[in-house]
Structures are given as C-alpha cells and as structure tokens.
Image (tube, rainbow, N blue to C red; front, side):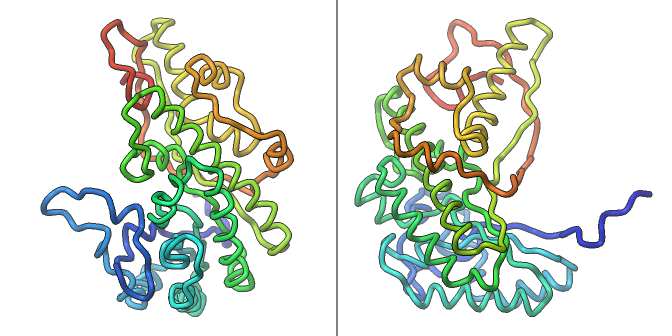
Length: 313
C-alpha cells in the first residue's frame, strides 16, 4: 500500500467566529457574525465552542489526536475591534495559542479572513463594497505579520471568497434591487482579491522565508442530462462557481466567459488602472475545501434568476 510522505501534515481546521466565543471579553469588538440572526435553540457565535476559554484543553486534544497542523483563523474584531485600533489583549491571546501549538509539535496555520470582520467597518463605509476596506485589510494583515511572522511561516489570505460574498446578512449587502445587489456582490469580491494581492506582495517583503495561499470552496459540476443545453449550463456553472474567483486570484483576470457574463448584466466591478500591478501577484499555494458535487440543468422559462447561484440544480 502506498504511504503518505513522512512530512505529510495531518490536521484539522476551524474558523474563529465558529469556535472562539469570548464575546465582549479581552477587548474584542463586535463582529459581523455577531449581528446575524440565529434560529431558536441553536448556539450563537457569541459563545460558539468557547475556544477562547478552553484553547489549552483543545490543543491538548489535538495533540492526543496526533494532529500535525492546526488551521485556524484570527478574529479580526479581536485584534482590531473597530477595524483600525490595535488591541494588545487580542494579539496576546493568539500569542498564547500559537506558542501552545508549537510547544505541542503542531504547526499553526492561520487564516487572515474567514467570513468575519469588525462590524464597525460595515457601519463606517459598507465593508467590502468600499475600496477603503482594502486598506483596512492590508493594515490588519501587516499587524499580524509583524506580530507572528517569526513564529509562523505558512499563512492563508482569504477562505472561500465566493461563500463570504453571497450571505447578505454577513456582509451587509442589503440592497433591495436584485441588479444592484449582484453588482455590489461582485464589487465586494473584487475588493477582496485586490486586498489579497496587495497583502501577498507585503508578505513577500516581510516574511521572505514563508508561504502564503488562497483557499477556495470547490465543487465538481455535472450536467443533469446529456442534453447539450444542460452540458453548457454545467460548464457555465463551473466557471461562475469556481473558476471565476480563482482565475482572478491566480491569473489576475477573469475568463472571457465570466467577463462577458458580468458585463452583459451590468455587474462588472469597477477597477483602477493602478490595480494591475497588484493583480500580477501570485499566491504560493491553493487550498481546496471540497464538500460535495453538484448537478446542474439549463434554465427554464419560469425559473427565478434573482438570487445566487445563477443556475439551477
């Protein structure tokens, strides 16, 4: 039987807003996730798994499991409660977590952005819909690189970019008009990529011996039937669902199909000429979150196309 390499990293992954809790403690600010409505009977993100109070026990369990790497995310609103001001208590918490992981022989693999951001940035200028969020993200990343760059060499910029732009309640895209909502969605996504690209350039200067990458949610898309229209729909869905965001992140441009699709609907994001020098930056690796495959059929006359995703299962 084939063996995995000795240096293969078996591990586990979490996101801060889904496990940390610690709401209102240690200088933590209000996060966008705190503002989401939670179904009755379910734990909210203010408590979550209470990792904030039990991280040492959690790391001990990781050690017992034999994990070699732990992918987690920083809670932006813990490190910079209002998106601008640095919170030393928040930085200290992650110092303790990282040091404990290293002491247990577990490699820390942090994600800078995993669905969560200070809610103040949404109140201030609409979050990712505004270019000012690019500057806020880069400043936040710089703080993290300066604090942990000597201890941590592998990093992730953004987790599942498409998934974070589509939940309206999480990102503050509450436009009532469907066309406007879609346009804002793709503008937000573009700003995320631009922020990521500028951050990669910064990372390469600050942590020259490190590696930084991007993580996508990826699905294999199959046509519902052998009908050519279903086959074409599946190809389009795969481009719109997977390759579109990855193309911009890796190659610095959208595909011809996706460019045409966005311009046809009036959803093509606003870009500045100066952005091109940043879009050429490349991540060192691509992470893939794979959950399930998807079957797609061609659009029918009475299908509602007002909501994401723009294809039919």
